[in-house]
Amino acid sequence: MASFSLHGIPVSRGIAIGRAHLLKPAARDVKHYLVAEEKVEAEAQRLSNAIATVNQELQAVRRDLPADAPSELAAFIDVHALILADPIIAEHPLKIIRSRHYNAEWALLTQIDELSAQFDEIEDAYLRERKNDIRQVGERILKILTGSASTLPVIFQPDEAMPQMIVVAHDISPADMLQFRDRAFVGFVTDLGGQNSHTAIVARSLDIPAAVGMSNASALIQEDDWVIIDGDAGIVIVDPAPLVLEQYRENQSKLLRERKKLGKLKKTPAITRDGTVIHLLANIELPEDCSGALDAGAVGVGLFRSEFLFMGRTGQGHKLPSEDEQFESYRKAVLAMKGRPVTIRTLDVGADKPLDKDEETALNPALGLRAIRYCLAEPQMFLTQLRAILRASAYGPIHMLIPMLAHAFEIDQTLAMIEQAKQQLREAKKKFDADIKIGAMIEIPAAALTLPMFIDRMDFLSIGTNDLIQYTLAIDRVDHEVAHLYNPLHPAVLQLVAMTISAGAKAGIPVAVCGEVAGDTKLTRLLLGLGLREFSMHPAQLLAVKQEILNSDLKVLEPAARKILKTFEPAAISEAVARLSLL
Ligand code: PEP
Ligand code: MG
Image (cartoon, rainbow, N blue to C red; front, side):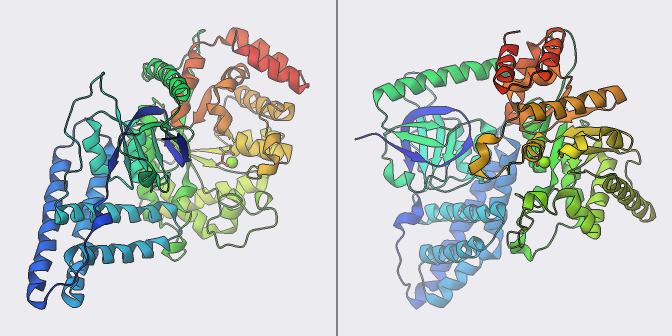
């Protein structure tokens, strides 16, 4: 068969090469027929029995979870057990059997299709994905009903001589993924799923390459086909040409060697060769990301983008998360980090992160009512968040970070509101850390040019290079047409970053970088040379950055960086930065 490739969503990194093993969904070949009146109760009972069997299965999987199973897995299995027990599955299909005389499989599928249609209406991507959990639960019941429960090939232990297998399926439930773990399965390809699908989350925590959202991969790929998953690109190559296969095998070994080496650095402190301690922190979007941060050896969370708790809730009647709901999320994060600091950024919505997709967008959203501007315009919403963050600070070290500040009055108003929130909590007799550290994002050039104004008022600074570059170079960060102009090494950007780091150092207040450049290994040495001691990034980048740090010597990087700051020719800057890696 000719080679072909499929494109989907990259959700878990790495390269996997193996033979396809197809999981056929039971839902595909389900019989539909009407049941005679006198057999209706027996049919309903058949469905109830199947549901009870699935429940036992789930409880067994849950009970026998291996100690090293990813923590999310238990929670996902619980979600499936809850769905199974919910009247939408446990009762409604029985009603369909009784009222319409459908056979059990048909009644169940009818109900699941109905629920799926309702979920499709939901705007929130995370919640919309939960539709697949319902489908997966339905699949399990169908497999019991149709007697096709075992879809696994004969169990075998991983064997060097045997080709490894790649599971190709319409969808895979987290519980099924666990079963595959002990076998020679090295990757997952699914038709369904997105960044937030459980398959994706579990694949990431199992560290198995996966590509999801592959549309009709399970129809196009045949059992035993050779398959390559390029997890970084979200590409699946089926029946690759020998040369392609060889190339991927080479890349795979290289990646594995690098990863193995990096994996050993998890517990190594990030200290430069001259003995300077560097703090490597994680950027997270939801409290659940904390386990990944800890796994990567982060010493704290440098940026918790709290807006992900607020976004896309139109399906819930435009409701903002309540103070208690937010408090629970912040508390969860700080408890998960076990005494390590968690920097929670107050709501940064607007521009590319609209709170509500239906909201009328401003003419220049990036220059509009976003982040702190939005919060100051919505004081009740802001106070709610401030109280929630403050309350969580009673449970562990929390720092509060304010985005997009540019004016002294914005800082003063924000600080006054934090005081007001504290007062409200005192009156309500709620605990919080009275000395909570408050910091400012430096992400507007005006802020970088007026640092004393910030240093006088704030406990720490964090440079948001993503926005700082956007605003310094006047390029919309979401506009593809100007993406080529987005350059962290533009001398103007370097000047602003360097000024901020050195002003903080002089004043003795911590300065971090939490934009994408913090995780770019090509820039690690430059940032070290400029005096940066705190880097906050996606956990996946942390070990590679640590490796750069371990090989760096500030005594040579500092003078080299000073020289770069005196250079204004872009080509010379790029060359000099590339040369830092040889020092
Ligand atoms: C930044 O601007 O660099 C930043 C870290 O924040 P965000 O990407 O969320 O705007
Ligand atoms: Mg920003």
